[in-house]
Length: 177
Figure (tube, rainbow, N blue to C red):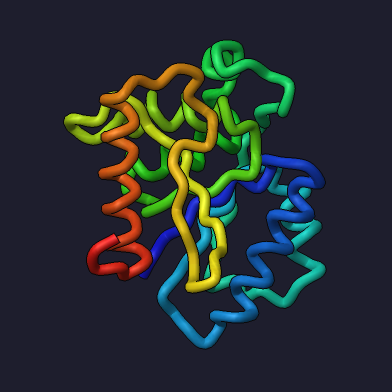
């Protein structure tokens, strides 16, 4: 079973859009018992949105968090003030082995800094990289880094290439990307 942490308060129109996304995923995969959502955010607002959908209560748990990270916050400010936020707690749930992955549509710069602080980087990797999938005529391309790192040297670019290769191999099933 995959435990997915959701920062329900991140991004525009939160938590509406985030709960709607959970619903679309659940609707497509409800016959599977292979996933569980740990939903972080304002419990009252989340419950209000969940009532609009018939998502089984067996596939999620809500964790009330009293604060959120705004789109206007700088990473430095947010790191100092975000320890009770939905974003911080969704990422931290991986350290506590409550979740296998964290998803947030919130402030990207803050998410990158919080993730690096909490989860660290893999040995030998000096900077994390944002990855994106781009469709092509034969499937999908993976692109790293999408701009969260202001300065990168040749060592970082080579590391990004290896991380992209591992992602394409393990997640996308491409034997020799």
